[in-house]
Length: 271
Ligand SMILES: C[S@@+](CC[C@H](N)C(=O)[O-])C[C@H]1O[C@@H](n2cnc3c(N)ncnc32)[C@H](O)[C@@H]1O
Image (cartoon, rainbow, N blue to C red):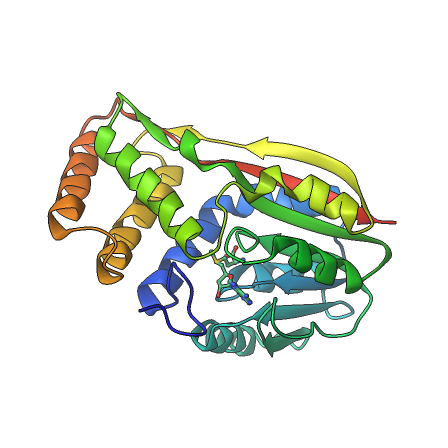
């Protein structure tokens, strides 16, 4: 059963580790985006649905001692991780809020930036989320989202039916719990409805072979999510064994290509 403060992907230590690897894979693209969006020393940034805090730490380094990062997260495990990471680094510019983005009031502030990655796809009311994010920003403040626009681009060449059936199960499991994997398709309209103007929309998609670092991002997701889907009773043990074996076989072929789920980077300005 999914617990009250948990969500479809879970928040245990294996998932925490996976989010760390995922952050490292994406870090060059994220740092580039933050710089293009204008985040720099002295800014106040809110990390919306911060997870274990890997992006929070990079933001804290970027805005420096004269800036502030406010990390909002619902999971107690992840909140503990953010607190530990910031105390290990002796960062004094991070404030942590253990709250629900939809049910609770967000902190009252007029921030310069918000950063929200892979969170809108899991919430029950994305329009409410975007509206609440807008309320935390000053006029001219900038909201950055990284969300999927077409999860089903996640395929292998040569074609692999087991991986494709895994992708379908994942999408179904998010929809069954009130989320929408392809939420980025709706975000520009939701942002405009909430008083934003869109500065830029940029796709991020990779095509990688098994010996490339980026491959570890989707492959570690498959490993963790097979366990999770089984634990939630959504699939059978035999099905998970088949997906795992098929992925292993594909990985043994150096000429397998993995096309990753399409992500849109959206930068919007509050007017
Ligand atoms: C896939 S993780 C992404 C974490 C982080 N943004 C990152 O990019 O590494 C999704 C996060 O959203 C959080 N989350 C989902 N729904 C939430 C809600 N209603 N309120 C607060 N946090 C939520 C989860 O607890 C989880 O940490």
